[in-house]
Image 1 (spheres, rainbow, N blue to C red):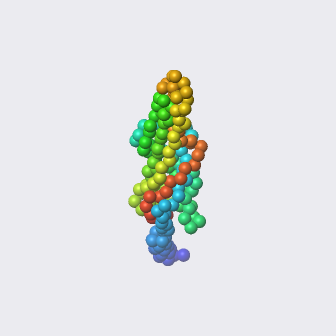
Image 2: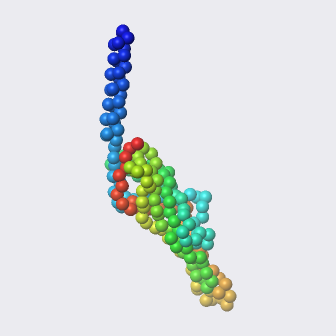
Image 3: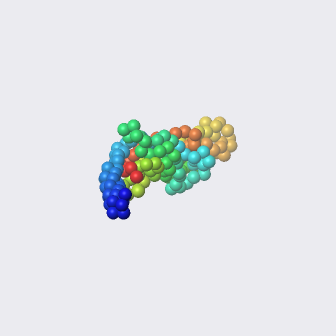
Length: 174
């Protein structure tokens, strides 16, 4: 192969490569995650979600317990991280009054081959709550019942909870 033929072959190969890259970029897969899509989440076992320990407004991290699939294709992998916040926290009280905690889901980051068009997080809706056991009967039966407190509201970190996608979002393959 002479020098000119080789040079022409290199140019032709470079042009073909550029065209292929442009075509593949133009055909990047886009997937819509519909509003209301269920999201299964789990809190880390290393934290305690209790009305006795967490106040209103405290942010909590969680992870995706199951991947999110659309049309049989995984678009957000298991383990993606998200944020929740303590919406309400009432400590237990005297007279057997139980504690209560309400946690609201906020958002979810993408993980895997797909991401939002502007790399923002996916907004979520939903909340979970727990109320401690009341001990009012005990407090009425005993003279010192005013000193008996109810149980704290506690969410189990062993359970899987469900949130929903707040608004439809388009994800694009990277």
